Image (cartoon, rainbow, N blue to C red; front, side, top):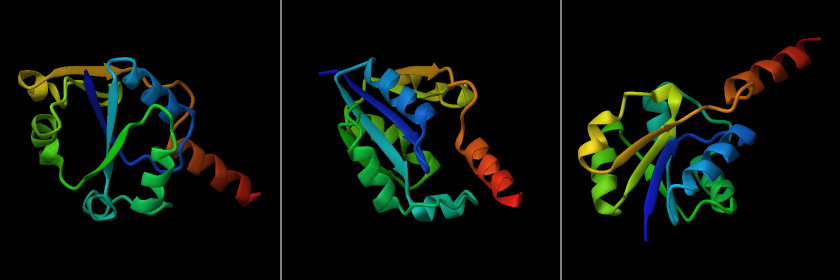
Length: 132
């Protein structure tokens, strides 16, 4: 069985997230999503609309996702790859080059982002429509 892992906050799930998960799953048989915990988001200065448990439930309902694990630190990636016997590490290409150090553990793939959609854009668009 070929295992794939990806990481993210996955707040306000949108088509860009679904595209990433679908394309990540195409690299293997089993997709693990390491989901940023609420405490880790706070450390990064991020605040999610949904709690970790809510985001986890949403991801578990996505057919491409086989397992959701917590992401608690930046440094845990190599440990996760070894612990879960991961074959392919997948991230969006906005992170290109940042995780190349994992190439000694597994294949590293950066996928193109879906054009025209992001959580930031959704939040901005919603704020603008509420200002009028």
